[in-house]
Length: 234
Image (cartoon, rainbow, N blue to C red):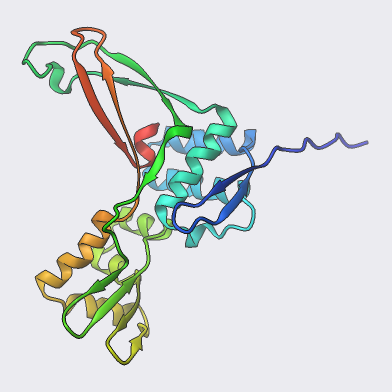
């Protein structure tokens, strides 16, 4: 007789990008092993692939390849919190071994971070619709995990931005790119001011971010640290 299967608990989480409710379970021993092997390899692309595969396995009704990258990071932190505990132990010391007064202090201070308190921060002025001039506007989507992975492989940043174009519009029509080359040529035809507006979309889009203060156990100085992106938490 085969051994019984253990039912995993399920949890609900709202995606920061659209408020959609996602059901997920903690990752299993076999999935944790994949994550540990990727972390030990110190290969950022292997880690991205491992995280993507774990989220695909643990979440219901989610196309991981279409998630904005900040959604993916937020999902993973919460899956990790429910799988092995919400507390992550980090260590900090003053940059360069000196505090703000210039005094030498190389004492390492342990810090506990509660992953369930980490949120995706949104800029109230951010928009995915960009006015390029008096006539033309542009609608963009957020980069996905595949887009981020391709940048890690050395892909052209302009081509990645081109993939994020949903449409170009004017007062009368909406134009969708025929293909990636069409979108790339459009990006390359912009002037510096127009290109800067697209980069502002990237720079102000929602980000997984957590800011905290701690007191150094050596000199007693209070420091403020901002963690940004999934990799900063591990």
